[in-house]
Amino acid sequence: MSGTMALDAIFQLEMGGAPPADTAVMFTTGERRVIVLRHGPPDNAVFAEIQFDSAAFAARGSPVQVTVRPRPGVYGVTIESGTPFTTATLTFKYAVHFLDPTGARARYGSDIAYERALGIARLDGANVTFIPSTRPALDNLAARVTLPGTYLVAAPR
Image (tube, rainbow, N blue to C red; front, side, top):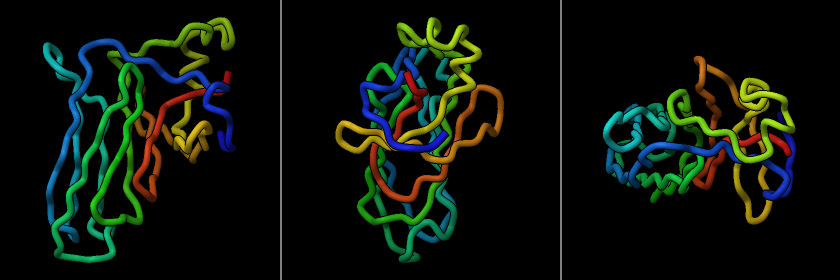
């Protein structure tokens, strides 16, 4: 899936369960780092992972702070970084807390068909742009992100 659409022209994947908390991590550039966000107790299931490889930041050996803010009620995050990065892998994991939004089942015919239509999109004002997404495992959706911003799991209406 690719292309740009209005925010009101998509079904965002909704989330049940205890939401993950905002997370801020300080680390040194030039080293591989994985930030894991988990739903709250009692299950602490993984919500999303952001992987930075050793070449993600142009400057090596410098401290960087990355803050990740989950969006309320949906599978989405805002990634903030004090230093620009060139690439990271964002993976959403939704096996436990998947909720299809109102109207998605009627549009797609089933939860499975809706799930298969999902992609990761970057939010830009009142529009979203879908970026190439892969399925590294069941109920996982991953994409390469090349700049800070807000990313959502969604399908066209």
